[in-house]
Image (cartoon, rainbow, N blue to C red; front, side, top):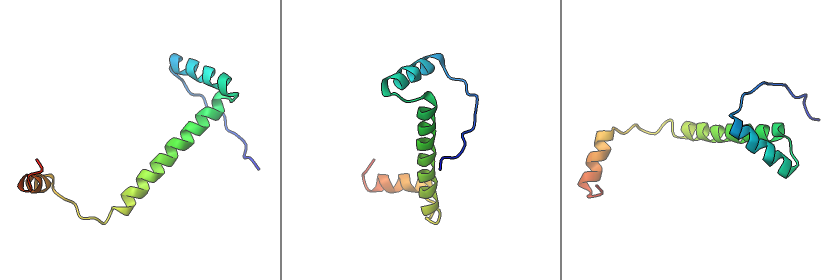
Length: 77
């Protein structure tokens, strides 16, 4: 069962709005559907990033100077 949708007012750049209108007509979708999908994808990307941060939270911190010195000693830079 689909949950009730909520109304929100957003302000779009005129060129972006025109592009969305054209894409909606071309794909037989609504602007709302496309915006909802874009927001879902962006939030999913954020969730992946946060998960990666959590996975690496216990790794030791390396000082930039130490990494730079090591790279120079190994002839990488």
